[in-house]
Amino acid sequence: MTLTAILITYDNENSIREALGLCEAAGYKVEKIVKQKFLNRNKFGIGEGKVAEIKELANKIKPDVIIYDEILKPSQNYNLASTLKMNIVDRESLILEIFERRSASHESHLQIKLAQLRYEMSRAKEKIRLAKMGEQPGFMGIGMFEADAYQNDIQNRMKSVRTKLAKSGKQRALHREARRRVGLKTISLAGYTSAGKTTLFNLLTGETKEESPELFTTLSTTTRKILINKNPILISDTVGFISKLPAYMVEAFKSTLEELKYAEVVIVVIDVSNTLLELSKKFRSSLKTLAELDVDQDKIIYALNKCDLVSPEEIVKRAEYLGLGDNKKWIPISSVTKENVPKILELISKMLTETKPYVKEIPKKPDYAKFYED
Ligand SMILES: Nc1nc2c(ncn2[C@@H]2O[C@H](COP(=O)(O)OP(=O)(O)OP(=O)(O)O)[C@@H](O)[C@H]2O)c(=O)[nH]1
Ligand SMILES: [Mg+2]
Image (cartoon, rainbow, N blue to C red; front, side, top):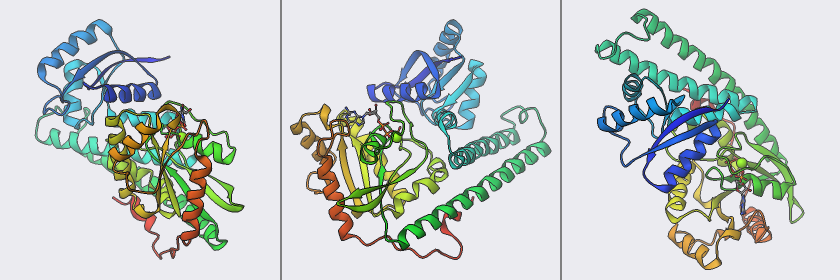
């Protein structure tokens, strides 16, 4: 059964499109879109007048939930939910819902579990704080002792998930080390969700991994061996980025995204068919995430993918707009028509001969463990 929703989002085409994509990926049917210039107001996120309007709308449409395309503070969520008498799903929990629906591997299950527990924890802390200040009646109808027990329980569950994740991180490190020993180099595909990473991956490897216009199609890293100029190379496909993703979600996905840090070459796949505004927003967001993951700028190649949809002159303009103009490491490609794919392989090959395999001693206390500490 499909759940229905009223979507509250920003008043511009790109935000609306992305929000609709997220709703669809999470399995909601949007009955009505409410557009707002500001979603960061104090009490409800939106103005009080608008809340009244939405209440009326909700009475008429009777959706299952209200989707709010911003990260709401727990107090704002509470205020909206209690005034509208409806379940509010903010951007953060919407993304969590998608990840939960899509996750297939054991590791991504764990990562999502950790992200959910962190989400629950931040809400619990805020609820308890408000209950202490007397601003909210009780804590889910239970007393302070139970509230403490509840927090401890979340903490314990987080600890157990972290231990399991650290274990799989360790496993990955061992695999990397083994690959390094036999001199295998790795290239990784990264970029905003729906840029075409998996389509390029499938083209290069002959794989048939799922590619789709839906957001977050890929949620776990896949690695395959290919030959470039007769040299065996490993190539991996990774989970896509998205803007306004809370830092702890990047944290939760660190052990799979970590592959990017250790890869000799990172191909940042960009959907060049996006509008300029969208293009720069996604580009900035991707660079920010790569920086958070400690990925060295020098080993990045930019693949301006979907060049079959844009004229060559326009592509040059867009590359300049992104500040890539003088950078020699960008190439327009199409993973569908295969245009310039041999060219990008050549560039990769050249970079690989110039780089030494990423050498890193395994530290005594593995550094990936720190990602899962509080
Ligand atoms: N026209 C055109 N479409 C493309 C190209 N590359 C990918 N696509 C389409 O773009 C959509 C997204 O492609 P995916 O490969 O699933 O994108 P992704 O980056 O792996 O996305 P996530 O796994 O969600 O992060 C699909 O519908 C592809 O068919 C291209 O070069 N040209
Ligand atoms: Mg993909």
